[in-house]
Length: 142
Ligand SMILES: Nc1ncnc2c1ncn2[C@@H]1O[C@H](COP(=O)(O)OP(=O)(O)OP(=O)(O)O)[C@@H](O)[C@H]1O
Ligand SMILES: [Mg+2]
Image (tube, rainbow, N blue to C red; front, side, top):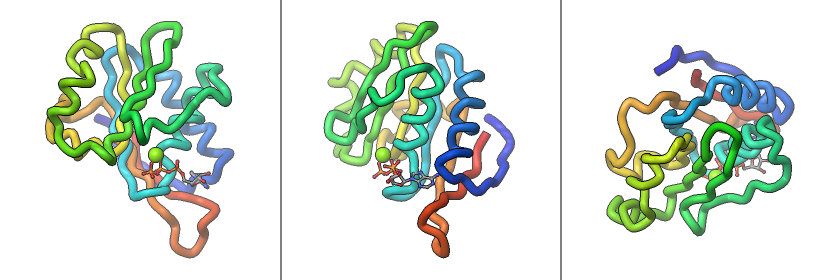
């Protein structure tokens, strides 16, 4: 796990953060994305996928729990577990099989998985609202 830093993020320096992580991710990595509703977790994943050249193809997995993207070196699995009612649902989703192939997991609302992912994960990013300015966010992470 990595050292905590703290930063103000607008949509353009979010790109810089996403590019930085995109250069580091490797098969087997798990990245937990923490933050309240609307804190910017999905937006960060969109920027990350843009860094890999997948512009505009990203949809939020809120209803399906999982969206997967084939990248050059691994499959990137974006999960949003907000609506997960029971961690057992992850078994039916085939999580174990996904782990067997070269994969990277980016997980929103990871606490809902109740230990179905290895802890500590490789990366943890925390996104926060900034009360006095709705146009920016703050983050702590890698
Ligand atoms: N760094 C940022 N600066 C300014 N606005 C942002 C930033 N990140 C996200 N936003 C805006 O906040 C809104 C919500 O973002 P997003 O859907 O990524 O949140 P989320 O954390 O995934 O929420 P949820 O828990 O509901 O899935 C979007 O309209 C997005 O454009
Ligand atoms: Mg989201």
